[in-house]
Length: 102
Image 1 (tube, rainbow, N blue to C red):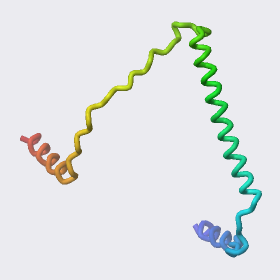
Image 2 (image 1 turned 180 degrees about the horizontal axis):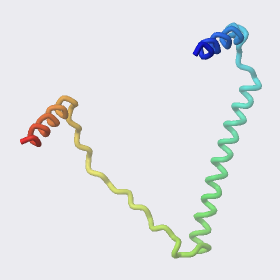
Image 3 (image 1 turned 45 degrees about the vertical axis):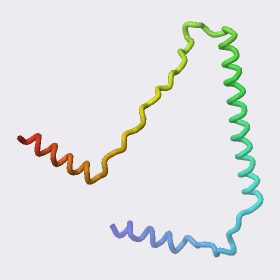
Image 4 (image 1 turned 30 degrees about the horizontal axis):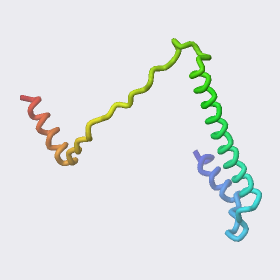
């Protein structure tokens, strides 16, 4: 048990925190960040290009027509009913419990 309390103490003594003026963002990190943004943008562009090729091939009939997925119909929901306040829910739960015990 004493070992568990000694380890954080030893780590805090050995770990030196740099001063605020010693820490600064460099141009290398900024360049890497920009390269990562460009890589993600390129991957997104490539994905869209490949998906368009797949759609064109499907429309051209290169795939088995029995494998074609039916168009997805998005259901239109009725307007949401406002939820009762927390106090109203608590009162209705108490009433439901009382009704259930009769």
